[in-house]
Image 1 (cartoon, rainbow, N blue to C red):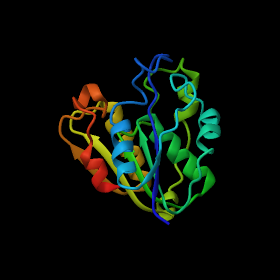
Image 2: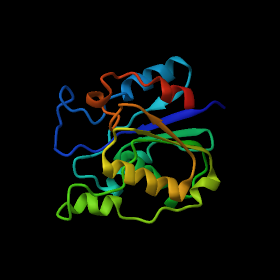
Image 3: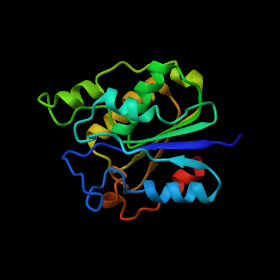
Image 4: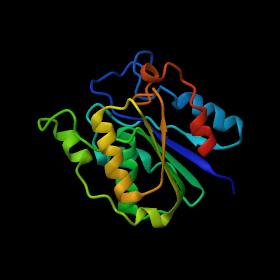
Length: 188
């Protein structure tokens, strides 16, 4: 059986339900999905519920509609990384690869944001690295300080390979200037 891929988008700071204007499920995600499907890799990009007010249990309910096994590549962007790492720690699932793109684990919206505080505050299960064949983390030289700190937190707990690209910011279309992300295709 071949590999399959599930990509979890990030969390915007404000509510936007309009498929034409929202960006949290865009950036490089549709491009990667189309490339992987054309290569024969089944790829899912679930739309997570109310990502502007991320709720772990709601994300989990949506995510668990998709089967995950030892042939699965899980990719997270920003807060999607925090979700995937917590989920892998809780479920003890074995997967093929875990790829974190601009990982985020810090509530940068402040203590008043109860959703993000609950979403990001958990201990990372360091045994995840024993259940995953490869862990890869993408960052950028011009990523925000909280993003760099989040990367350090994840890497300290999970190890894995760090790939730092130049001038990619937080891996959004605005920072990258393109929806193409060939470096991600290479590591999948």
